Image (cartoon, rainbow, N blue to C red):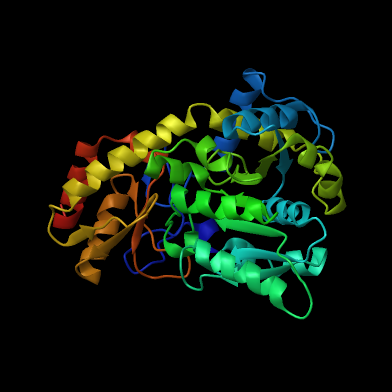
Length: 374
């Protein structure tokens, strides 16, 4: 029987592959709180009682319209459009900003370049020019050089758009500084190059830097924010920008198969999850800094903070035996560590709002007892 169905012990540390999370679980994985089908149904019921569940017509009107209005305000933009996926939201942003030009600058480590099967090239005829190979972000000089070279060839081929992803998941959630972003977007504006922020995890960045989300979004023409990574929706994203640019974007959305029926359920959950989220996540990051400082006083464990990091913290455990004892012991105490997808060792702790479910003193005691095998 499949381990998800049997729920039998499968790993060498005698831990089931599918943990049964509770409302008290602290889960050091993912940007949001893990939700079981039962929890999703409970949240939908709560949204219904709060009057947030209002039917839409193929992702127009109802809860979807309310969600778009709310996120436009949250991001300081004139308008916003719901998309079923971040892939489509980023693609439509680049497609719109290029305005007939055929090149866009992106980070080599970005999701749009690495994970979308060249969608912008195949579906919209836009070539992505990757910069800053194996680095979190590019610099103004790299952007200026690429833009100059693009127009200096025998065929003039100007850059139409520039996208920045921050935080960058492939680089352990590292962020680009607001000062660097501002310098690059100002240059792009001078060169009539459209600017887009892939801010899927924007609220992780703002919690780490203490900078309001509007300060980031206002310097870009468009910005995308994920709804399912941490706002509680099962899918979806928001693209925000000027009203004129987004007014008819629903036609493009439908053309690319993104006009979902009954999108209002995801929209209602995201509306509900966005209420008070920024304050809760800021509190989580502050609590994490204190917790990790205290955990570093325990033997056999070291947690570090990345320069320009966000909500991901590298962890080093002295031996595999200590790792197995720690993971197993914490499991019994409703605290969960796990390797990244495809990995076998625990190398990072990802902070989310589940951290607020237990006090730091409780968590320090859990780690201490688990390390001691108590």
